[in-house]
Amino acid sequence: IKESFIHGKGLYATENLNEHESIFMLEGKIYKLSNLTDEQLTSSFFISWDKWLVCDNEGQFINHSCEPNCILDSNGMLKTLRSVNAGEELTIFYYSLPVHLYLDYEKNEKIYSWNKKLNFTCLCKSKYCLNELVTLYTKGWCGPKTLFPSIKADYSQTSSVQLMQHPAYGRKVVAKKHIKKDTLFLSNPAMIILDEQWEYAEKTPLFHYCFRWGENSEHAALVIGEGSFINHSYRPNATYEKHIHAQKIDFISLRDIEQGEEIFINYNGVFEEEPSPVWFEIRGSGQEHVRYENK
Image (tube, rainbow, N blue to C red; front, side, top):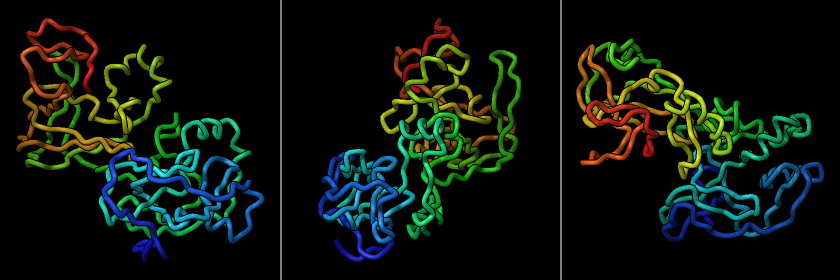
C-alpha cells in the first residue's frame, strides 16, 4: 500500500503476476445498497446487484481504472485480467455489470435503481477514461446493447478504403488512396455474439463473417463495416487487431498499399503445406464452404 497516481493510497503488486491469476479474497461485510451509509457508499465494492462489499482488509485501497488490470469476481476474489509487473498498481472497474446480471437488467430495468451518490469523477487518465461514472457499465459481451462498449472507443472516420463488387467472389475492399506501411487505415465496431447465442447465429449467413472474441475466444463478433468484406490471402498486405473491451477491430497495413489495390488479410495463421480448412474457397484448394477454424 502506497501513494497512488490515481487517488489517495493504492494497492501495488510486490511481484510479477500472471494473467488470470487469483491474488487474494477481499474481506468485509456484505450490505444491501439501501442499507449503506453515505460513508460506506464511497468505500464499497459492487459484487452483484444489491450485494455490496464494505472491505476491511487491504482490498479497500484498490482504485478504479477505466483500463483495469484486475477484476473482482462474484465471490470477492481479486484476479488479474492480464500479466501485471511488480510495482504496478492494481486496479478494477468499479461498476462492472457481468453478463448474467445485464441480461436480467434488460428484463427488469426498474429494479436496478441507481443511487446518484455513487457517481464520481474518474482520475485514471487512461486513453479509455470515461471521465464521469454515472451508472453500471457492461464489461464484456451482453446481447444487443453491446454496441455501447464498456470503455471509450474511437472509430477512425477514414476515406482510405471503399467496398466494391468483385466479378469472381462477390465483394472486395480496395484502397481509395495510397496507404503507407504500418498505417491504421480502418477501425470498425464489433457486435458481440455470446457463446450461448452462437448456435442461432451459426445457422445464418452471419456465420461466414464472424471473428472469435473474448479473453479466451469463447464468444464471436461481427464486424460492422468494410472490414467484414476484406478477403483472405496467405500473402496479405494488411492485418487486424482486436480490442476486446473497446469492442472494435483495427486494420493496419503491413506494407505500402497502392491506390486501387485490393486489401487482403490472412485469416488462417501461418501457411502450411496442408493449411487448416477455411470457411470460403481458396483457389486451387478444392475446398469449398468448409468451416474456418482459426479466425
